[in-house]
Length: 384
Image (cartoon, rainbow, N blue to C red; front, side, top):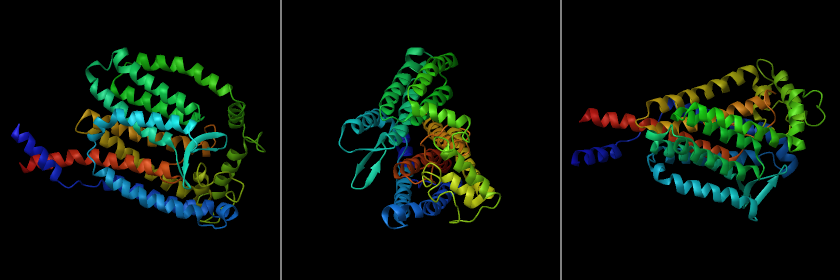
């Protein structure tokens, strides 16, 4: 017992090693994001706020704060999140509910998804996504011996997902619901839940998803415009058409930073949902491939950390956070390229948006802590 206690103390004293292979592409993407947010938003900001630097200043502040949060998260032992799983879950639920009933809820585009205080906005669903990963990792790790039982390994996690789904659909935010569902399904699959339960849940959920899709006219119009955006180029297909035009204009080398045309009041939300389109136009195929390469390294390192974690909890957290980032990348790029119906999801580390950037930086910090803990433990063991 005394030896184990001394070993734990030695581990705490050891300096954590930063995962350069993970940290470099993240910081590179954040830097590219600052430049591209300014390029994409300067005309919009000048027209709306009287200064072309409005979004640039905010994104720069978010980036600096995000780096600080990343460093802090990297030095917080990830095991702490075990004891915080339920408090965080309750906090996330309260925030999602409060946004619907409090006076601080902010609406945009027909959806009430943000708190707005002193000019800054906070999106609770971004925080809830992180919390969902922590809760699932804690719960699955705790129930490893009974994970294949329906009432233990599947039902409680499905009910938590349903709670989040109801709260988020009231905003409404159908895109986030899909992401939450995919994260839960993948983590339960990795955790060893019976495939029959997972496939059965899909059979149950698909009719519900279909009914939700056809229950709102704007969702039906989005699907129709997705099937043939050129036929609806004047209304619901407008975003996708101009996004595709941006990529087509960019060619191989791009038009050059700041020289894009579609961002000039043609492409809606060029600095958030469609920043990938601006990158495609101004940096061309080469720039797109560089972005894809950086994302590939991040996802590869996340999966590697999950595989080499010293315990199941760390492995589950790592695969959940990596999945969450990967799904955001795929959905945002898929929408920009006309491969998926339009969803209001940001592109990690690149799009303008404080909550998204900060929560993704927290995720990277936690991933680095998970990866470094095993190295520290091995170093202490070898010294002994």
